[in-house]
Length: 541
Image: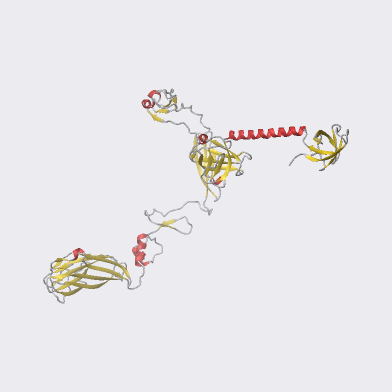
């Protein structure tokens, strides 16, 4: 688009009036002092008469006729204003650039990206929202093309970064979690940080300034020791700080600092006080005595409060107000049973008020098994006993215990086959096993399995006893032949009368000769894996 208005004009020699043919004239395209070219000759516009006529500032010097016409709407003032506007724009751009650099590092915001080089002059981040950003990525070249790697590397954990829009002033503030990481290397930096606050919107493509403030490091003491230890650091670099714990030149407390003024050996500063002198004691406060007053319970929901009550010129008393519990009716105290309770015993509420308590008790084994007492507590042992005593289907197995022997025991105790109940003096005991019944009335079923070999044909007698009773619970006999492996198996039943542990034993005898368990008369068989056994099963009834 051009600002020049073109057309044709009817002119008269010596006249200043021009009749224009073309677009309608206006103050904008045909202003006073605007320039016009008529048939190749330049003139200035004195005024506009209407939308098709204007007057020249001097007489037309050509001949009568119709000539080409070009009107330039910019007069001298307008041109000067344009030049001034351009100068101001250029100045503002330079000023903005100077301001951006004055605020910190200067970049174009490239938006969300992975952990990659964002490109020269650009800054990217690892999240779409500034508030979710935990990493930003900065090229070592800023928007002005200047190398900023060394400046970026000055930051460390605790440094504050403020990313601020040059145009709007919107910002996002961060706290660095670690020093910037050199990537590339020396091409871009990855900065790990934590979002702190922000305001406004920083759009992708905007120019931003990265303002930063390093956290203070405080006084850095390189080494501390007694004064005589300072000599070990006489060759340290300038700035090295040594804390003399025993004072100036080792003369005693308080501790002082020495600083190396240069790398020259022994170039130490005079002692610097590490702790200033103790100040004078301050004036006493208005009150020198503090006492505590009553504690008042206020309704539920009211805040706790402390009131200072001035007693006299030296004394102030503190009164406390504490809110009651949620029901608003209690005083917040609980009364235990008179005389205390047994350590470890459970506690029950006494009455319906919720404030009095009484001692509770744990259930006994009988309580647990019968389940008749509802006011006592169950511990782990009683719970296990209750489970064990729970009704089972008749004939089901409650528990089983077993004892075996792998010994090649030789039995030579003799007894005859008579109609007399065997006693615990007959034969030799070879096995025993104990069981603790779970429920009165259940059955204990025993199964005895004996095998081995005899020296000849004889009767092998097996007997079962309970709790070393004088008389046998049951007895069996088996005729065996010599030089052969023989087996004696028998069962017995016992009704549970109490829940005390019961021990069942097996005794063996022969009518003559001898019988060897787990082998023959010549010795053991099967290398110790052969076995005789007694198994007890508690059967539910």
